Length: 248
Image (cartoon, rainbow, N blue to C red):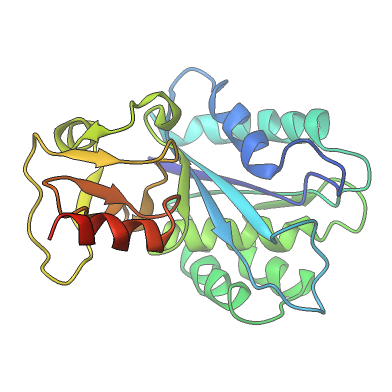
């Protein structure tokens, strides 16, 4: 059974880390019967009417659990984790939902709204219904991003992974086969869309962040023109273009 645990608004303007790191820490200390699938950063609407610390993003920890009985433990652990690591001046929120909850479709719709329009705490509470949604200080505005983080992640077509199979441990470049063996899909997005061979290298520039596309971690790449690939995200587009030009 898949469980979504989302955090939002846990830091402040002077914080040395953001909500993504807090979520990754939670993924490292799951109870028995739970396995981390990934941690996904979700971008919400940036708008003058929305208070946020830096980028207005939330983070969702995606967990595969043996059975529903562990959900209560996850809620308690996540609440304690949030209250221990949240920073002064923050407005933290937590949302915990399983793939079996009847409210999930409504949260998916709410997530889409939160990415494109101004929504309220009342909207988040209405979408969450009877699933766990809690504020942990300040204005409690973090419940909006937490609910949206669950919805966008469960929807499967939004966000980027900040943790999946030890993203920070891969070499640069990394082979296509190493990414595929870890469960990541390497997908060309350039004009020719030639399928990468398993032995070809993927340059990451030390920043490998798969996208959540179709419910899968996907590494979008462009050919470097020299028999290799460049993962999009960290490398400036100009650098990709220049690399391609050198190989022609």
